[in-house]
Each structure stands twice: as C-alpha cells, then as structure tokens.
Amino acid sequence: MKPLRNLLLILLLAGMPFAFLLAQSDNVTGTYKYQAGDAALTLKLIQQGNTLAGTLSSNTGASFSLSGQIENGIGYGSCSDNEGSVFFEVYYIERDLTLSLIEPDENNAPDYDNAQYLVFEKSKQSDSPQVLNNMTGKLGVQPAAIAGSPGNSQIGQGEVGDPSWGFKFTPPAGWVHQQSAEGVILGHNTIAGMILVIPHMSENMQLMQQEMMQGIQEGESSLAVSGALQNPAQNVLAGDYTGMMDGTEVKARGFGFLSPNGGGAYLIAVSTPDKLSGDLVGAAESIAQNMQYFKVDVSDLARHFAGTWSHFTTNTSTWMTFHPDGTYSDEYEDSYSGDLTDGWGNQTGDWGTAGQQSGRGRWTVRGTKDVGTIIVQKANGEEVYYEYRVNQKDGHKYYWEYYFNGDFYMKKEE
Image (tube, rainbow, N blue to C red):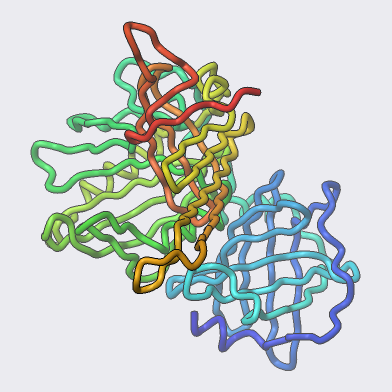
C-alpha cells in the first residue's frame, strides 16, 4: 500500500520499552495524535467489547480504515484503503498507545521484520457522545451495520444452512439451491452466474483475511484476488476475484463474514466477466444481510466422535484426535526396514528409516452416527473432509470402528 508507506515514518526502535498489554478494564475508544515535523496523524478508535474499528488520517488528506479485535491484551486487524491493506496492532508503551503497521509476507501472514511503529498521545480534548456516535456509524460498528443477526440452530421451512455451520439464511425470491456437506450453490433462471456459500472456521478477521487473500484452487478451477480487500461492515471483508472454472474465464465478487461465535461464511457471486451483474452481486448481498448466526452446540454426535482414532498399515501409523473442545490434532509415522545384501546376495546388515509428521486445527461433524462428514480445518487454512461410515458385520454395527475416506480406524479406549 504505497500511500501508507510514503505517509508514515519508519520508527524501528532498538530496545523498546516494556509493552503494557491492554487489560480487560482498558477501553481504547478515543482520539490519538502523532506529530513528526510537518506530518500530523490522527488515530480514532472505537472499541465495543472485543471489537475494534477506527480511522487513521493525515493532514495531507490521506485516510485509512482499521478493523479488528482485541485478544490476549493486543488489538489487531487490518488497516486498508482502496489500494491495499497491511496488518496493524495496538498496545500501550509506557501508557502511550503504540500503533504498529506490519506488511504481509509472501504467505499473506504478518512480516514483523517489516513493521513500522508509531507512538500516539491521547488527545486531551475528549470527543463528545455525538461525535463518537457519528464515528461509530462511519466505522460500521453499529449493530445495524453488522451483516446478519442472531438466530437459533433450528433450520426452518424455506431456510438454508446446517446446525454445525453456525449460520442459516433464506434465499432471495426466485433463487433455487443445492446443498452438500461443503456448502450451498444457488442459481436463478434469468440471472447468469451462481452464488457459492461456503462455511469456514476462521476464528478472527485476521485469519479470514489471510484465507480470502489465498483465493481458491480446486483441480482445474481457481480464483485469485484482484486488488485490495475492503471492509464494508464490522464483520465483513469483500474483494474482487478473477480466474477459471471448468475451462471458462470467470470473474467474481467475494464476501467473507465472521460470526460473533467464530467461524462464518464465504459468499462468492461468480459469472463470466461480461455477465457479472449487479443483480447477481445484489442477491449475494441480500443473503448476507439476512444471514442468522448461532452458536454451534456440542452435540451428542460430536461427543460420540471425540477421542483418538488410529489407522495402521504395514509401514504407517496414523492417529487423529478429535478433542471435545473442537480442536484437532494428528500424528503420522512411516517406517520401513529390511536386510542389506551385497551384490552376491549375502546379508551385510539391517536398514531402517522412520519419519513423523503432526498437525493441529479444529473440527466439526455433520450427519448421523452411521454416516456423515467430519470437517477438519488445519492451522495452515487447509480444509480436509473425512466421509465416514460405521463398520458393519453380520447385521451388527460397531460404533468404535469406522471407515474415514475408505480407511479403517478404531477408537482408542479411554
């Protein structure tokens, strides 16, 4: 984001003072000032609970929007204008507010080696309630500006969703849909294109931003972000995409929505470049506005699958653990051994190799005890779907033995 880099001074300070993290009692709402020579910056922040939003502006007329949250004593999120975005963090240094601006690396993760630090003083003149209310509206943190609303997990007549997704919605009039474990496809008889609704398990705006920047790569179909992501509402990111689907050039408008309970949905309105119409994008926005979010309950089904499951072959061992709190871990080990022989077939020794891998993430399950899908989102953002079915023999069902994607697993006894 070139205007931002030209605007701000690089203050990489050696031996920075101890950072006082934001305590639960701290509220950073207010106006903060920074002055360096002729450059003057104004930082306005609004904090509602753990949600953080604001603006960063200069006396040259440049302006940027901030959107994020406070977690573990640090406020963080994205700072953006219409040309791009960087990550930001806010925290106290000797009771002054420090704003750090962090460039993304090649994996769209914060690159702390390329960070800028600015120390702001809180303005002595407090903003009036009316000014703060006006700011709140502009920053998109009013409840009315949040896309979606609270709901319950019961999927009613005419509604689309799944209790394990944490959201549901009513399709716009005239739109039909097909639903699977991976999400929903919506189409219309007279509007060219389609709308994809895909559940995700990102826990915050920063992770959702990283996933949206990565785009989609599935076989021969791909979508890559073109331009910067925007932040039109408190829990929403939006961006334009281009790519190919089934050999056809396409263009898309994508939205990411974060549920107050974590996770959420991606909405993608996609069509050919000449037919990506306002009607198609408008239908996606309509779905966003009537989206209802709810907390996913730990069901009997989740409790049934919680535990460690093992799979063995001649040379490999795999363990998957579905923890009761919704986290996931796995371990994989391969080992090979045999005899070493010389060129005449004489045994000269033994050989053996072993390799280990492990992973972390989150999981959820959809279906019944007999058949369904377990969805794992790994820490690197990859989503893995395990289609499961219970092992049956002679009319009996063994609920501690399952086939996951065709591989036989047994549950470890507690």
